[in-house]
Amino acid sequence: MFRRTFWFTAGAAAGVWATTKVNRKIKQLTPESLAAQAANKAIEAGHRMKDFALDVRDGMVQREAELGEALGLNADPDPASSGHLTALESGDGPRYGKNPKDSKNPTYVERSTYSYNRNEDH
View 1 (cartoon, helix red, strand yellow):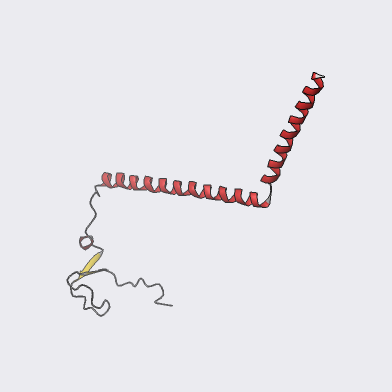
View 2: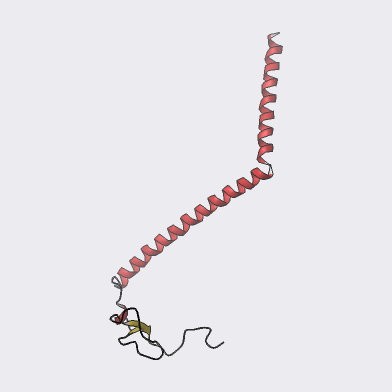
């Protein structure tokens, strides 16, 4: 009698366990659940990509600082003394016009006769 009761209880428990397991798996495979899982994975991948990009940016800044120290480029150059820019004190040139906002500060333009407007010759 006890033996039959034991096996009946063990069988019922196994049946409940198997039914619960199957129902959970069926719920995981519904279209809504699959879409939610895909969205969660995409968000997680996006966070990992953002973290990677931030790590790369930090490494880049660190390496630029190391190279700047090694090459002696610690200070930022003054735009007027770099040789690439020239100051127009008056700003009266026909090509550049006047600086109406602040006439005391010079306007910096590149020293070049080549036009950088890509749409100019089209």
